[in-house]
Length: 445
Image (cartoon, rainbow, N blue to C red; front, side):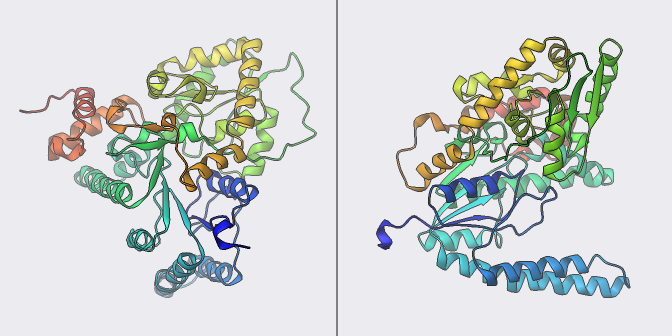
C-alpha cells in the first residue's frame, strides 16, 4: 500500500472512563484506521481492551501480575519490597518500552483523562517528533478541586490542618497539568462544565458526543402494565452522586406511589446493562455538569429515560445548541422530587423521552458517528465553528459531585487560608467573583 494513501496509525490510552475510549477505538477501526488501545491502569467495570502487538501485551500482563502479587498475603516487609520492585519494573521497563514502540509505530496519539507515560515529558517528545496529539479531559482531571466532590471527599479524610493544604496542592497540580496539555496538544476536547482552568479555545465534549457500542440484549419483556414503577440507580460513588438525597426523595414518594427502587454498585458493565433492561427509568446523579453521562447514555440505548440533577441545567442552553443537547430530564438539584414524580406519574412523557433519548444515542452518539468527528479532527479538516467554545465565556462555577453549600464552604476556607489567588482564576474575573459570592466573600482591592 502506498504510505501516503494509508490511514494514519492511532494510539489511544492510557486510561479508560466508562468505556469511552474502547468505543472510540472500535469506531475508528470500522472507519479503517489502525488503532492500538492500551490501558496502563485497571478499570473496575471491565470494558474491553486491545493490543496489536504480542510483546506489548506480554509486558503489560507481566506488570499487572507483578502488582497484583504485591497485594497478597505474606510478611509486610517482603510485600513492600515486592511492591517497590514491581513499580520499578513498571516505570523503568514497561512504560519506556511501550512508549518507544508507540512513538515508532503511530502517527496520532489520543490521551484520555490527562494520562501520560511520564509527567508529560513524553508529550513534549511526541510534539518534537511531529506526532499529532489530542487530549480528552473527562472531568476531575481538569476541574478545579474546590468545586469537585471527589476532591472534597479525599480532603475531608485528612486532619483539619491538612485539608486546605491538600486542596491547594491539588489545585496547583491540576492547573499546571491543564497549562501543559493546552500548550503541548494540538487539540483539546473537554466538557465545558469542567473547563474553568482552560485559557484557550477547546472542542466541546458534549458536541462530539459519548460514543456508544452496545449489543442489543434479547429476551427481556417490558414491565407488565399495572406493576410497580421500577427505578434504577447505579452510583459508582454514592457521595458524589447524591445517593443519600436520592434515597430520601424515593422514600418520600413511596408513601404516595407504587415504586420499586433498585440500587446497584460495583457490578461489571454487562450486569448493569441487564438491570437497565428491567427498569422503567433511571436516576443517574444529583450534581452533574452534563445532561447525559455514561450511565444515562447506556440507559438511553435501551429506551430508558434518565432523571439527572445538576446546577449546570440552568446554564445548558446558554452554552450549547439545542441539537447537541442529549434528551434527559435534567433539572436543578432542588427540583429532584418533582422530576422523579413527573417520570413516575406521566407514562406518556416517560415513554416519549425514552424514545427521543434512544434515537439520539443511536444516531448522533452512535460510536461510528462520534468516531467520524474524531476523524475530522485527526485528518486536519476544517472543524466546524459550532464544535468550539471559549472557556473565558463560561460562567458555570458549581462544579460536579457536591451541593453548592459544600462548594461555598470549601472556597471560603481556601480563600481565608491562602487568599483569593489560590483559586487560580485571575484570568477569569467573572468566575472568580461568582465563587467568592457563593462563599459569602468579597475580594479585597
